[in-house]
Picture (cartoon, rainbow over the protein chains, first blue to last red):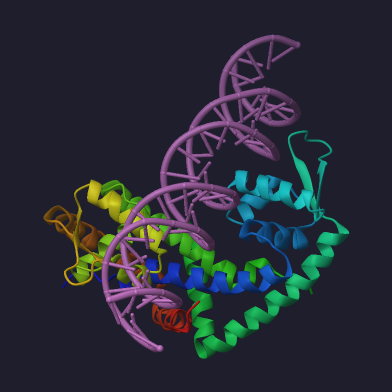
Length: 141
Length: 141
DNA sequence: TTGACATCGTTGCATCAGCAACGATAATTC
DNA sequence: GAATTATCGTTGCTGATGCAACGATGTCAA
Protein backbone atom coordinates (compact mmCIF):
# COMPACT_ATOMS: atom_id res chain seq x y z
CA UNK A 1 0.00 0.00 0.00
CA UNK A 2 1.60 3.28 -1.11
CA UNK A 3 1.70 6.44 0.92
CA UNK A 4 -1.45 8.57 0.93
CA UNK A 5 -0.92 12.33 1.16
CA UNK A 6 -4.63 13.02 1.74
CA UNK A 7 -4.54 11.22 5.05
CA UNK A 8 -1.21 12.62 6.19
CA UNK A 9 -1.61 14.69 9.32
CA UNK A 10 1.00 17.40 8.61
CA UNK A 11 -0.57 17.95 5.20
CA UNK A 12 -4.07 18.08 6.59
CA UNK A 13 -3.09 20.46 9.35
CA UNK A 14 -1.34 22.71 6.89
CA UNK A 15 -4.29 22.82 4.50
CA UNK A 16 -6.78 23.48 7.29
CA UNK A 17 -4.61 26.22 8.79
CA UNK A 18 -4.13 27.90 5.41
CA UNK A 19 -7.84 27.85 4.66
CA UNK A 20 -8.84 29.22 8.04
CA UNK A 21 -6.16 31.91 7.84
CA UNK A 22 -7.33 32.91 4.39
CA UNK A 23 -10.90 33.22 5.57
CA UNK A 24 -9.90 35.33 8.52
CA UNK A 25 -7.53 37.48 6.48
CA UNK A 26 -10.42 38.29 4.16
CA UNK A 27 -12.33 39.63 7.16
CA UNK A 28 -9.68 41.84 8.70
CA UNK A 29 -8.26 42.69 5.31
CA UNK A 30 -11.50 44.50 4.62
CA UNK A 31 -11.07 46.44 7.86
CA UNK A 32 -7.35 47.15 7.67
CA UNK A 33 -4.72 45.96 5.24
CA UNK A 34 -2.59 44.00 7.67
CA UNK A 35 -0.26 41.11 7.02
CA UNK A 36 -0.38 38.14 9.36
CA UNK A 37 2.80 39.20 11.20
CA UNK A 38 1.40 42.69 11.66
CA UNK A 39 -1.85 41.30 12.97
CA UNK A 40 -0.05 39.07 15.45
CA UNK A 41 2.14 41.88 16.72
CA UNK A 42 -0.87 44.13 17.23
CA UNK A 43 -2.86 41.42 18.94
CA UNK A 44 -0.03 40.60 21.27
CA UNK A 45 0.65 44.22 22.17
CA UNK A 46 -3.04 44.65 22.89
CA UNK A 47 -2.64 42.28 25.82
CA UNK A 48 0.94 42.64 26.88
CA UNK A 49 1.44 46.36 27.16
CA UNK A 50 4.95 47.66 26.46
CA UNK A 51 7.21 44.85 25.43
CA UNK A 52 10.39 44.18 23.45
CA UNK A 53 10.85 42.67 20.00
CA UNK A 54 12.37 39.62 21.61
CA UNK A 55 9.28 39.10 23.79
CA UNK A 56 7.01 39.05 20.77
CA UNK A 57 9.45 36.89 18.86
CA UNK A 58 9.21 34.07 21.39
CA UNK A 59 5.55 34.44 22.32
CA UNK A 60 4.14 34.70 18.85
CA UNK A 61 6.32 32.32 16.83
CA UNK A 62 7.79 34.85 14.45
CA UNK A 63 11.41 35.41 13.57
CA UNK A 64 12.79 38.55 15.17
CA UNK A 65 13.51 40.07 11.77
CA UNK A 66 9.86 39.65 10.85
CA UNK A 67 8.74 41.22 14.12
CA UNK A 68 11.18 44.07 13.61
CA UNK A 69 9.92 44.87 10.12
CA UNK A 70 6.28 44.47 11.09
CA UNK A 71 6.81 46.83 14.01
CA UNK A 72 8.43 49.40 11.73
CA UNK A 73 5.50 49.29 9.33
CA UNK A 74 3.03 49.56 12.20
CA UNK A 75 4.96 52.52 13.59
CA UNK A 76 4.87 54.14 10.16
CA UNK A 77 1.10 53.63 10.13
CA UNK A 78 0.80 55.28 13.54
CA UNK A 79 -0.49 52.16 15.27
CA UNK A 80 2.55 51.39 17.40
CA UNK A 81 5.09 53.49 19.28
CA UNK A 82 8.71 52.54 19.83
CA UNK A 83 10.62 53.90 22.78
CA UNK A 84 13.87 53.04 24.47
CA UNK A 85 13.93 50.80 27.48
CA UNK A 86 15.17 52.37 30.68
CA UNK A 87 17.97 50.37 32.18
CA UNK A 88 18.79 48.14 29.21
CA UNK A 89 19.89 50.08 26.15
CA UNK A 90 19.59 47.09 23.87
CA UNK A 91 15.86 46.71 24.33
CA UNK A 92 13.10 48.77 22.84
CA UNK A 93 9.60 49.12 24.22
CA UNK A 94 6.76 48.55 21.79
CA UNK A 95 3.25 49.60 22.65
CA UNK A 96 0.00 50.47 20.94
CA UNK A 97 -0.87 54.09 20.23
CA UNK A 98 -4.46 55.20 20.86
CA UNK A 99 -5.10 54.58 17.16
CA UNK A 100 -3.68 51.09 17.54
CA UNK A 101 -5.88 50.42 20.53
CA UNK A 102 -8.91 51.62 18.68
CA UNK A 103 -8.14 49.40 15.68
CA UNK A 104 -7.53 46.39 17.90
CA UNK A 105 -10.85 47.00 19.55
CA UNK A 106 -12.57 46.57 16.23
CA UNK A 107 -10.38 43.70 15.06
CA UNK A 108 -10.84 41.93 18.38
CA UNK A 109 -14.59 41.91 17.88
CA UNK A 110 -14.19 40.62 14.34
CA UNK A 111 -11.89 37.89 15.59
CA UNK A 112 -14.28 36.85 18.33
CA UNK A 113 -17.10 36.63 15.86
CA UNK A 114 -15.00 34.53 13.51
CA UNK A 115 -14.00 32.25 16.34
CA UNK A 116 -17.65 31.76 17.21
CA UNK A 117 -18.39 30.94 13.58
CA UNK A 118 -15.62 28.33 13.54
CA UNK A 119 -16.80 26.77 16.77
CA UNK A 120 -20.30 26.53 15.39
CA UNK A 121 -19.00 24.79 12.27
CA UNK A 122 -16.97 22.38 14.33
CA UNK A 123 -19.79 21.61 16.70
CA UNK A 124 -18.93 18.75 19.02
CA UNK A 125 -15.46 18.35 17.50
CA UNK A 126 -14.29 21.72 18.77
CA UNK A 127 -13.27 20.47 22.20
CA UNK A 128 -11.24 17.59 20.79
CA UNK A 129 -9.50 19.89 18.33
CA UNK A 130 -8.59 22.25 21.13
CA UNK A 131 -7.05 19.51 23.24
CA UNK A 132 -5.15 18.11 20.28
CA UNK A 133 -3.73 21.52 19.42
CA UNK A 134 -2.72 21.95 23.04
CA UNK A 135 -0.66 18.81 22.83
CA UNK A 136 0.94 19.63 19.51
CA UNK A 137 1.82 23.17 20.49
CA UNK A 138 3.07 22.25 23.94
CA UNK A 139 5.47 19.74 22.46
CA UNK A 140 7.24 22.49 20.58
CA UNK A 141 8.73 22.44 17.13
CA UNK B 1 -12.23 41.49 28.34
CA UNK B 2 -9.67 42.11 25.59
CA UNK B 3 -8.95 39.72 22.75
CA UNK B 4 -6.62 36.83 23.52
CA UNK B 5 -4.40 35.67 20.67
CA UNK B 6 -3.28 32.55 22.54
CA UNK B 7 -6.77 31.13 22.48
CA UNK B 8 -7.56 32.14 18.91
CA UNK B 9 -8.17 29.11 16.74
CA UNK B 10 -6.61 30.37 13.48
CA UNK B 11 -3.48 31.28 15.37
CA UNK B 12 -3.31 27.98 17.19
CA UNK B 13 -3.87 26.01 14.01
CA UNK B 14 -1.18 27.97 12.24
CA UNK B 15 1.37 27.47 15.01
CA UNK B 16 0.63 23.76 15.31
CA UNK B 17 0.84 23.26 11.55
CA UNK B 18 4.12 25.16 11.32
CA UNK B 19 5.66 23.15 14.13
CA UNK B 20 4.56 19.80 12.74
CA UNK B 21 5.74 20.75 9.27
CA UNK B 22 9.10 21.85 10.62
CA UNK B 23 9.55 18.56 12.45
CA UNK B 24 8.68 16.58 9.38
CA UNK B 25 10.83 18.73 7.10
CA UNK B 26 13.78 17.98 9.34
CA UNK B 27 13.21 14.29 8.72
CA UNK B 28 12.89 14.28 4.96
CA UNK B 29 15.36 17.13 4.63
CA UNK B 30 17.99 14.75 5.91
CA UNK B 31 16.99 12.24 3.27
CA UNK B 32 16.52 14.59 0.31
CA UNK B 33 16.62 18.38 0.16
CA UNK B 34 13.03 18.94 -0.85
CA UNK B 35 10.83 21.95 -0.35
CA UNK B 36 7.26 21.42 0.84
CA UNK B 37 5.81 21.96 -2.66
CA UNK B 38 8.28 19.49 -4.11
CA UNK B 39 7.38 16.95 -1.47
CA UNK B 40 3.67 17.38 -2.14
CA UNK B 41 4.08 17.02 -5.88
CA UNK B 42 6.13 13.87 -5.47
CA UNK B 43 3.71 12.39 -2.97
CA UNK B 44 0.76 13.11 -5.19
CA UNK B 45 2.41 11.69 -8.30
CA UNK B 46 3.26 8.59 -6.33
CA UNK B 47 -0.43 7.82 -6.12
CA UNK B 48 -1.95 9.42 -9.14
CA UNK B 49 0.24 8.23 -11.97
CA UNK B 50 0.60 10.59 -14.94
CA UNK B 51 -1.28 13.78 -14.31
CA UNK B 52 -1.29 17.46 -15.33
CA UNK B 53 -0.10 20.53 -13.45
CA UNK B 54 -3.68 21.60 -13.06
CA UNK B 55 -4.65 18.33 -11.41
CA UNK B 56 -1.97 18.74 -8.79
CA UNK B 57 -2.82 22.37 -8.37
CA UNK B 58 -6.38 21.61 -7.27
CA UNK B 59 -5.72 18.41 -5.37
CA UNK B 60 -2.79 19.60 -3.34
CA UNK B 61 -3.63 23.21 -2.58
CA UNK B 62 -0.72 24.82 -4.36
CA UNK B 63 -0.81 27.64 -6.87
CA UNK B 64 -0.17 26.42 -10.39
CA UNK B 65 2.95 28.54 -10.65
CA UNK B 66 4.35 26.79 -7.60
CA UNK B 67 3.51 23.38 -9.03
CA UNK B 68 5.08 24.36 -12.33
CA UNK B 69 8.33 25.46 -10.73
CA UNK B 70 8.46 22.52 -8.36
CA UNK B 71 7.94 20.16 -11.30
CA UNK B 72 10.75 21.82 -13.22
CA UNK B 73 13.15 21.42 -10.31
CA UNK B 74 12.11 17.81 -9.85
CA UNK B 75 12.60 17.18 -13.53
CA UNK B 76 16.04 18.76 -13.29
CA UNK B 77 16.80 16.40 -10.42
CA UNK B 78 15.70 13.43 -12.47
CA UNK B 79 12.79 12.53 -10.19
CA UNK B 80 9.96 13.49 -12.53
CA UNK B 81 9.38 13.24 -16.26
CA UNK B 82 7.30 15.68 -18.29
CA UNK B 83 5.68 14.59 -21.49
CA UNK B 84 3.01 15.97 -23.75
CA UNK B 85 -0.55 14.87 -23.39
CA UNK B 86 -1.98 13.09 -26.39
CA UNK B 87 -5.15 14.73 -27.59
CA UNK B 88 -4.91 18.00 -25.62
CA UNK B 89 -1.83 20.01 -26.49
CA UNK B 90 -2.27 22.34 -23.54
CA UNK B 91 -1.76 19.66 -20.95
CA UNK B 92 1.45 18.03 -19.89
CA UNK B 93 1.75 14.66 -18.24
CA UNK B 94 3.85 14.53 -15.07
CA UNK B 95 4.98 11.22 -13.69
CA UNK B 96 7.67 9.81 -11.45
CA UNK B 97 10.84 8.41 -12.95
CA UNK B 98 12.20 5.19 -11.46
CA UNK B 99 14.48 7.36 -9.30
CA UNK B 100 11.45 9.32 -8.14
CA UNK B 101 9.59 6.15 -7.29
CA UNK B 102 12.53 4.86 -5.36
CA UNK B 103 12.84 8.10 -3.38
CA UNK B 104 9.12 8.17 -2.64
CA UNK B 105 9.36 4.65 -1.36
CA UNK B 106 11.83 5.77 1.26
CA UNK B 107 10.04 9.04 2.03
CA UNK B 108 6.73 7.23 2.30
CA UNK B 109 8.12 5.01 5.03
CA UNK B 110 9.55 8.03 6.83
CA UNK B 111 6.18 9.77 6.59
CA UNK B 112 4.29 6.75 7.92
CA UNK B 113 6.66 6.53 10.85
CA UNK B 114 6.22 10.21 11.61
CA UNK B 115 2.47 9.90 11.39
CA UNK B 116 2.59 7.04 13.88
CA UNK B 117 4.72 9.17 16.18
CA UNK B 118 2.20 12.00 16.01
CA UNK B 119 -0.72 9.71 16.67
CA UNK B 120 1.06 8.31 19.70
CA UNK B 121 1.63 11.82 21.03
CA UNK B 122 -1.99 12.72 20.48
CA UNK B 123 -3.32 9.58 22.05
CA UNK B 124 -7.07 9.70 22.48
CA UNK B 125 -7.30 13.16 20.92
CA UNK B 126 -6.22 11.92 17.50
CA UNK B 127 -9.69 10.85 16.41
CA UNK B 128 -11.26 14.15 17.37
CA UNK B 129 -8.55 16.08 15.58
CA UNK B 130 -9.11 14.08 12.46
CA UNK B 131 -12.84 14.71 12.43
CA UNK B 132 -12.33 18.42 13.09
CA UNK B 133 -9.83 18.69 10.23
CA UNK B 134 -12.30 16.90 7.99
CA UNK B 135 -14.89 19.55 8.70
CA UNK B 136 -12.54 22.48 8.24
CA UNK B 137 -11.05 21.15 5.01
CA UNK B 138 -14.39 20.11 3.56
CA UNK B 139 -15.79 23.59 4.07
CA UNK B 140 -13.14 25.01 1.76
CA UNK B 141 -11.28 28.25 2.02
C1' DT C 1 -15.17 28.34 -40.69
C1' DT C 2 -14.28 31.84 -38.06
C1' DG C 3 -14.27 34.68 -34.21
C1' DA C 4 -15.04 35.12 -29.22
C1' DC C 5 -14.10 32.98 -25.05
C1' DA C 6 -12.00 29.50 -21.79
C1' DT C 7 -8.17 26.80 -20.13
C1' DC C 8 -3.31 25.26 -19.59
C1' DG C 9 1.48 25.94 -18.30
C1' DT C 10 5.06 29.38 -17.93
C1' DT C 11 7.13 33.56 -16.65
C1' DG C 12 7.66 38.45 -14.49
C1' DC C 13 7.27 40.99 -10.75
C1' DA C 14 6.58 42.56 -6.10
C1' DT C 15 6.54 40.94 -1.60
C1' DC C 16 7.55 37.95 2.19
C1' DA C 17 10.08 34.36 4.96
C1' DG C 18 14.19 32.68 7.00
C1' DC C 19 18.95 32.83 7.92
C1' DA C 20 23.35 35.02 8.73
C1' DA C 21 25.98 39.02 9.73
C1' DC C 22 26.48 43.42 11.84
C1' DG C 23 26.88 47.37 15.30
C1' DA C 24 25.57 48.43 19.82
C1' DT C 25 24.95 47.37 24.48
C1' DA C 26 25.21 44.04 28.73
C1' DA C 27 26.92 40.41 31.32
C1' DT C 28 30.64 37.47 32.62
C1' DT C 29 35.17 36.04 33.49
C1' DC C 30 39.77 36.49 34.64
C1' DG D 1 38.81 47.04 34.90
C1' DA D 2 39.78 44.80 30.53
C1' DA D 3 38.67 41.33 27.54
C1' DT D 4 35.74 37.87 26.11
C1' DT D 5 31.16 36.34 25.40
C1' DA D 6 26.17 36.90 24.98
C1' DT D 7 22.01 39.40 23.75
C1' DC D 8 19.14 42.83 21.23
C1' DG D 9 17.32 44.97 17.13
C1' DT D 10 18.28 45.97 12.33
C1' DT D 11 19.63 45.03 7.74
C1' DG D 12 21.25 42.19 3.45
C1' DC D 13 20.67 38.48 0.88
C1' DT D 14 18.72 34.30 -1.24
C1' DG D 15 14.94 31.78 -2.32
C1' DA D 16 9.83 31.01 -1.91
C1' DT D 17 5.20 32.79 -2.51
C1' DG D 18 1.15 34.69 -4.82
C1' DC D 19 -0.88 37.25 -8.30
C1' DA D 20 -1.38 38.83 -12.92
C1' DA D 21 -0.18 38.70 -17.64
C1' DC D 22 1.17 36.10 -21.60
C1' DG D 23 1.39 32.77 -25.62
C1' DA D 24 -0.46 28.57 -27.02
C1' DT D 25 -4.07 25.47 -27.51
C1' DG D 26 -9.22 24.01 -27.17
C1' DT D 27 -14.04 24.78 -27.16
C1' DC D 28 -18.23 26.75 -28.51
C1' DA D 29 -21.56 29.42 -31.06
C1' DA D 30 -23.16 31.79 -34.86
